[in-house]
Every structure is written in structure tokens, then in C-alpha cells.
Length: 255
Image (cartoon, rainbow, N blue to C red; front, top):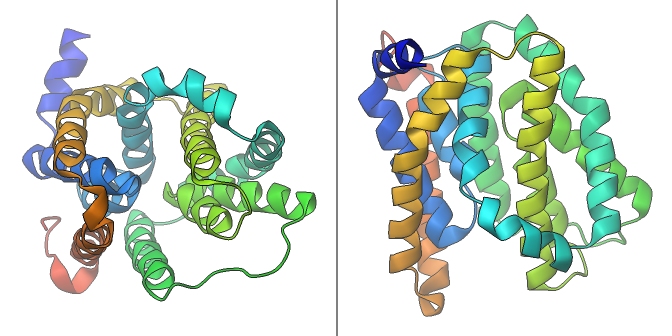
């Protein structure tokens, strides 16, 4: 473990990755989402795609633990089961795509997906029709595929819950449990397929502290009366991170 820690601390670009984890924590703290959208476009510039996805999973797995038992009680269990069923089917397919593409393709895809998500949120686009159980399976599958291929399982589920009839407490609980469960499933699938490398996992654990500090800062400065302002700031930060991963904003692997 000490040797792995030494290697983790020697990661090229580690200060940028730590900064991305801290800022991602702040955004998560005052907006409730955005960890991967902020972190991955930066992390993908300094580590292989599977490493970037595994590190964000390890970074994210400890923070929400205290809130998970209550979230499971509050959440809509049938929806969660359907979402996870979709993830189990589609996640391995997404990981296969991830390992089959060039790392630069992954990096640019993450940035483009993040910008696309911002566009949908900013324009207030919503699905207005009725959401049926088969659609929930499909949404879980979309989250699993995007999670495996680009490390972004959240966008399909976030957009789904914007159109769902559930109340805010159920939406928050289901989103939290879904993202936590996705992290566990990702680690399990990587372990079963012998792709669970210890070094990126340790890198993620190292990043837990700055991410946690960022969450504390974000939570401390949050004011419900200024929710729109915080969301606007979150959108700007995510956009800056996404743009940093595109080829015309970087050269030689540096933001």
C-alpha cells in the first residue's frame, strides 16, 4: 500500500487532478450534482480512461455512505430496481466500448457529453409524456452504458427525474442511491473482468479528502434563496472543465 500511495502521489498532473476533485466537491455541495462532469474532463488529460472512471468511483464511494441508509428508506424502490437492472445489462457493454476506443476519443467524448448535458439543463428541456416501467429499465440501461463508456451515468437519470412525478425528497434519494450503486457495480464488473487495477483506486482514495473538503465548502456557502445563482455557477464551472478537455484548449496533456 505505501508503494501504491507513492505511485499515486507521483501521478503527472496530480495538482490539476486534486484541484478538479476539490472544485467538483464544491459544485456537488451547492448544486447536488456535477462531480463527474467537473472531474472527468480534467482527469482524462492525465490518466487512461479506465483509470479516470475508477478513480472517480473510488472518490465518490465514501462521501455519501452516511446518507445511504435513509435514502434507501425514502427512495422509490421499484424505480431503483428497474434502474439497476438496466445498469447491470448495459454497463459491461459500455466498458467494452471504453476499452476499444482511443484515449483521446474518450477524453473528447466526455467533454462533448458534459457540454450537451449543460445545454439540455440550461434550455430547460423536459420529457412531458408518461414514464412507464419499460422506460425506467431503458433509462437505467442508458445510464449504465454512458457510465461504462464515458464515466457519466448520471445525465439520463437526472433528466428522467426532472420529468418524474416523484417529490423532491424521493428524487434526491433515488439519485443518490443510483449513483452510489453504480459505483459499486462498476467496481464489481471491473473486478470480475480482471480490470480492477489498484493504483487508480488508490488515486481515487487520495482524492477523497479534497473532494470531501469541497463538499463541505459547497454545503456551507449554499443558500436556498440563491439556488438559481448556484446552479448558474455550477454550469459555468462544468463548461470550463469540459472545454479544457477539448483539443483546441490543451497541448501536450496540460489544461
